[in-house]
Image (tube, rainbow, N blue to C red; front, top):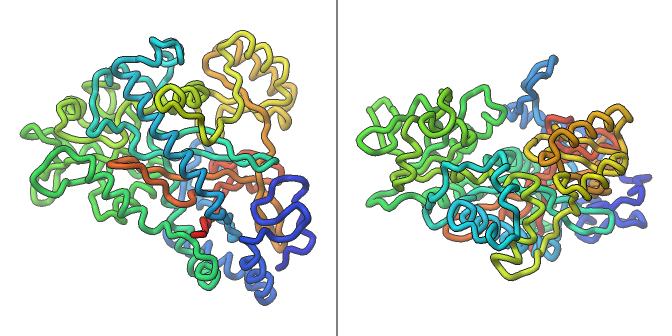
Length: 477
């Protein structure tokens, strides 16, 4: 296979320049792919897919009549990011996470940002992720958002924007790690020649962060991953990360509050847990504090957490910053808490709870992307240029009925990466989800999960909406 005839079609392409020549950082990879014997790239792609299948990397699509368990589609052509391009992204993500953490701490304590009218109280209190039960909580080191997956997109002019923040239970890093393992076997010489920065130390960095935020102890902290169970969409990732870190994977039924400690049941009896990397939503953590009908959590867990007898990662209540309406205020947070301008801009956003914004959105539905404030996975979204009149009427009614629940943004011309489609390469739109760890300091994993919209022309990259993934190569220099 060659890239002859590949057309960027006026989009920002991550591998090729507008004149059709490879970008300097991609030249070695392009030469290597084009030097392969006929059919060899397809064979390597198929071998990579078999390796991922044998690993058991699946995700769940709820309500799918064809079956819920699917293998995450994988594309063999990676996304390449130069060290020079990555440097401001890394700085911008650190800046953003620092401000978001200060915001979460503030809204559960003094609420200075609300009192100073930077963000309205009604916006905070009406957020589905706001938890009044968390008022006054003091997580170890003041860190609430220990693990964040921040979604980035690049527009036609090359500008990188933050599309949204994921601070509750961000998923996908297991796909990133497995994609990298497969790609290193597929193109070992290219990895060495380009100096691709490694990502395989993420599990050890994650474990170190989890241990760093543990309550004071005389011994090495005990850490466990809390999963809702095998029927959860991201169960593979829960078990994968636990295995990679060498720690226990537990469900709520495996845990209990015993002798004023969180303890897990083992074949040797109860053993204490100091840090719980929880992969379940706040509502299900503790039936005595949140939903009383939850069977997934641990009665008494929040009381232990309040008394610093256990650390929960991420902290309960971080979902207030996951809200897409709150997202619109992050540049204001950065100015307010850090006295800086945002390094990474937000996508321009109209808030439908504002009368003027709502009128504009309703008048321009065919041009905009409309999103529900608390939906994920590509659900609750209208892509105006690809919508029908009936869909626009339906969304207009939704906005009128619950304006607080909707935002709108311009339809960006997302950047593209060449993607193998049968026996040729075609451009497909991508986003990027870097992963950020916050313990003693803030660490950004070089690269992230590049998600690709495999359907031609689609801007929706989520796996549940037909998207796939690519490896992301950040170069050392």
